[in-house]
Length: 339
Ligand code: 13P
Image 1 (cartoon, rainbow, N blue to C red):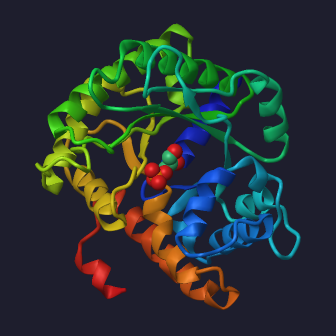
Image 2: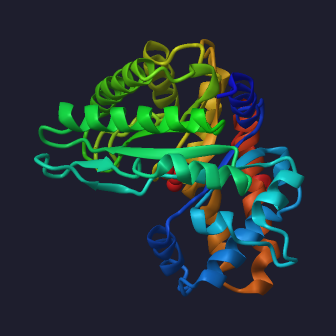
């Protein structure tokens, strides 16, 4: 384990004004995205779509790294350049999702534990050789009646820490992602309390398993009311609650926090990030690691037609740029119309 390599990668991932593109949808998840635009989920369509994103000129000014699905790590651009090589040549760090998905948790109905630790040490070696310099593992926490259980929080924290330690052994910087879902009807206060429990357990497990905090990136949810909660709150409230919660739970040794978008609209995800960066009090870099909120307009513009590639790239560039500006608190809503 080389502490300098791990910390350098982490710092580059969250460099001022840059963030991550999460393009690591599994074959099942990308099917849902393609279904929404009536595109067939073939290997070539998946390749062509990712090719379009990765060759967008200028995106590298705002995107420091891309999280890939395993299939994509071994695919190539139309001109034959392997994707990791293409990204690295444009100063975009290739990363890899290494978990095997959230599976039902025994004795905890409605809850999951993320699997994928068996054989991970060997897989990481293979991924590093293919060019991956950071990794992602997503734990999923559901809010509901008697949920989350202590059991679900604890087993997921344990697995996140086991994964992070193995990544660091392989000189791959881990993204630690404990996602509290925003699908319920709970209030913002409940989300804050649950996010606090989850982050406390996660950092306790990371400490116990001797994970180097300087050599990781945290990918949390923002503190939001559930999407079915009648009491929605304004941008300032979300930003203040999120920064307060993170300050209480995340050591300052962690170089950066890259949020997931989790089902927020693309514009709201940008506004929330911007509001946090306009506030005082964050000792870490606060940036984005968005999937849906970076890709939704591009996916719609593409619609599976190669003739639409340019329009799709424009849409992706626009969101990348606005999120890059939000990552330093320089975004304004007027910029949305300028497009
Ligand atoms: P969303 O931004 O669409 O939530 O995806 C980010 C991600 O990588 C979830 O693991």
